[in-house]
Amino acid sequence: MTHLNDKDRAAQMADMKSFNEPMPSVGSFSFDSGKKVLLNVCKKEITPKMIEDARAKGVQVIECPTRFESHSLPSGRVIWNTDKFEILVGRWAEPIQAELSELLEQEFSLPYFEFVYDEHWDLGHGWSGDKSLAKSLIQT
Image 1 (cartoon, rainbow, N blue to C red):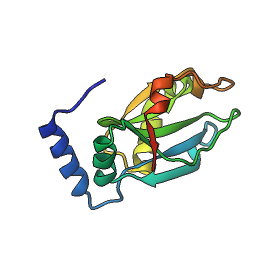
Image 2: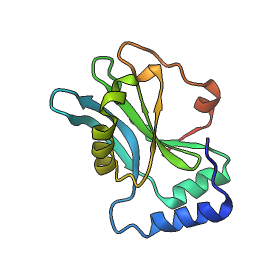
Image 3: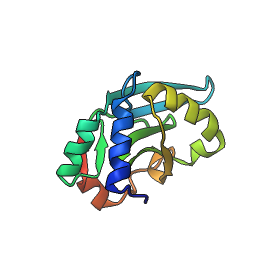
């Protein structure tokens, strides 16, 4: 995992504060593979203050408390993890990553992010994530 030093973190926060557009958001979504659109989008803006407050509390992950859970549609989540936005998805997203990236950038106003693949997000699977990560979550 990439960690920013204090100087780079301060520059990143300054960049976020200077946005003249909506602030980036965390949240959840599902994907209609036939129509190639996001569905059931739930999102909450994340501000530099929220990130700094979480950091001060030692919390690494910020997520939206409302979740769309579906086992019949491809779905995923957008979270803030330490120094970056992450898109949590299953392997269903690999072949359409470029197309999905564009939709997510627009819908969640994301300046940068990386995909994190976990079988939980594949159709028909349950949670397989690290329990220590679950303990570090903060809900906005």
